[in-house]
Image (cartoon, rainbow, N blue to C red; front, side):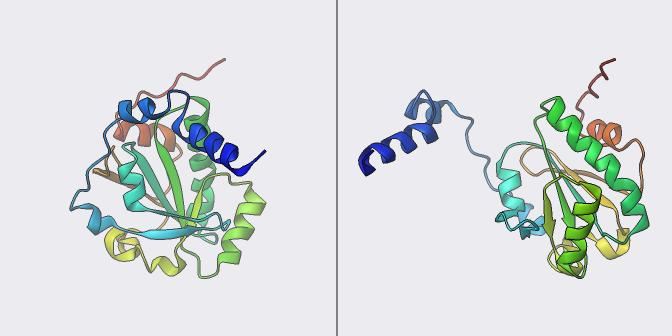
Length: 184
């Protein structure tokens, strides 16, 4: 196949089945909010799959949840299975929101070891010592695990600090999303 045909196929795949029309009918982009600057971060994923910024999450137009944790924090180790359960609920019920965790260990290898031993499948960003997020999110004062909940467009809603066995229900309640019924 020649290069021109490959380029055309790639362009059609990116535009979707309706081509340019699909782009026109898409939701209008979320306009930047001055408050985003306060919460701004740009971090790399632990698995070397690029990075993510607060602005990207806010511009998505979807609610999002950020969870800070440490691999050697006992409360974090108790909380992370419930965060993982929340991630499964998001996927299973196709909830329209993002969940991202931010590890603040001294060494990235400690984070990687915990991910491997626990089977954690949540996207994990790494912020050594919380250097890039401490000021805006008050990590030293609030401790870990720490969850920040944002509405669509990056609107701050609330925090959850410490261990919660009802984590999924608590986050969904803050987002005013009905808790999915468990299938028997």
